[in-house]
Image 1 (spheres, one colour):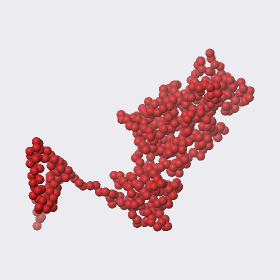
Image 2 (tube, rainbow, N blue to C red):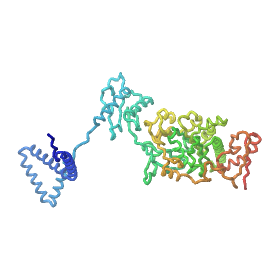
Image 3 (cartoon, helix red, strand yellow):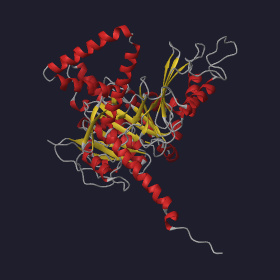
Image 4 (spheres, rainbow, N blue to C red):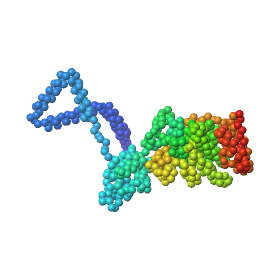
Length: 578
């Protein structure tokens, strides 16, 4: 016999019932939200009535009469007082609302998953914070973590955000090795991919772990509110410095704490070394420094990578040259060494005469070198001197001559840096991913935070001399000629560039020398050019107008002596036009 089909109401009734239940639930929630004040007052009146009944039941029978008389007297007074009933109703409603409020309290202490995390941390620290000779160990397998972790906070994902750890007094917290092992263990157990700040309290035997928020990476290149001699390397945590700078974030403005590097005669760290991996942002840092230096001084750029990262600065006012070849780098650094010596001599002569130093000796001169070790092997193969050897005079006496040297190099070429560069560059910056050993090697001290592998370009650490290690985020200063640069960042860099002093090109040709500027005629023999910058003007990409007239006069006065004492050197004859 064939089966009869079910009625339509039975086949579709479950869906309609579920839909009806959902509508009823939604209506109930809406009604609860609208009637929430009335529900609260009703709940409070019920609680007040329950409290009154309990008080009446607890009152002895011999005292109920006077209590009723007192209540009747109060009601009579309220009725006779003007606006008494209205005030009594308002007071009763307020008391009912207070009594009917939701008294559900948040659960105190961590939940089960958080307790499990804390127990795992506790068990992991037992081998480091316990010994067999301790009669009352704070850390023991299967022990209680509540005494070891008095304060703990968690983020929305359930991971540790703030933790105070107590440890025994015999732990060697003054040695960097044991401290590094504890920090590495806590960073691994608390969650990778985050930066942790560790604060050791040796007197109280407590270690505080805090999760640091990421530094802002959307800061574009702009004019910073600084005084002459101050250079903004980047931005750091608010707790690291006691100063803030107003910065523009599109149409908004915010105050961000900077890492300010001070140069000049009174600076204790007159030169800087930046180290990083390819793509870590060292060239971005050097571009940012060069743009800030051009506000008050002159800049000579030597690029060993040959990638054209500084082509936007070629031919600009204040840019003495952008050298990308070995011959240009040698000539430019040779001139810089001679200019440093000339400034020292001029300042010393003025000091002996009781006069202020000449103006041209006080104008800052910046020597920016990106990957100078790329020229070392090339110079050795071609039989030339290493360009780094020409940096010894600017590095050693640059502070007195207002000459600042900035060097950027990669980790794999640190051994190729000269001893003078490693010794005199006491301001250090490390950008990009780096191990704790690499950071300590370059900075001279380990950071108080745990380095992570996945960081944006321009993120790293900075240490000025013997100061503390700061987290650093370099402002976005990309190459405006790069196609990958966004329009906003490209326009921000172009707004900071000074006007051009020569026709734009890859290598600006030397400007013609006109009166009353000194005219220089340089003749060269078949031998190598002279190494004394005071006896001949080097053949360099620098425009002749950029060379100080004092150097040209020294060239003219020393041309006769140089031609007789060293016939193999270049002979310079200068005539000053009237």
